[in-house]
Amino acid sequence: MKIRPFQPHDEDAVVALWQECGLTRPWNDPRADIARKLTEQPELFIVGTDGTAIVATAMVGFDGHRGWLYYLAVSPRHRRQSYGRALMQEAERLLKERGCPKLNLLVRSSNAEVIEFYRKLGYVQDEVVGLGKRLIHDQAPDTPIGGE
Image 1 (cartoon, rainbow, N blue to C red):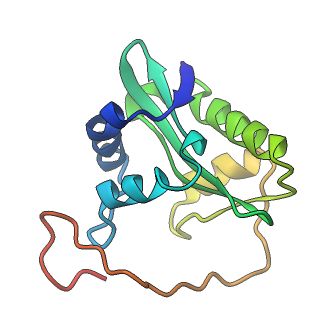
Image 2 (spheres, helix red, strand yellow):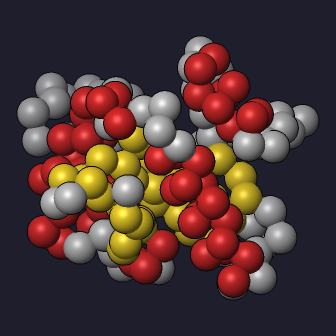
């Protein structure tokens, strides 16, 4: 797998990968998430390729205090080949390069397999409660009104 920054022509393949991996939700328009990321630290949005195919992604950010990671995805056909590990190593390298002291990420509590993946990479559960407030209500293109 080759890792490189996201390019605008990758969008359809990235959204398809996220859908295949079950990362999209009706209340989050993935295309809007991509557009927003491209306005802030676009070089921290990375993709993994196998030939010309997008097989992995990671959306990384640094706010000056903590790093964050979203949309880590590896195509089901390309799992168990250390692609996720390679993306995490690149994300950590990019953040360390910027002086980032800690990387945070969120995983749905029901996703035991992914939690175990991160634990094997040295991540531990912080003693915090995640809170959020939606400031802009996305409406994915084919989502009925009323998504969370």
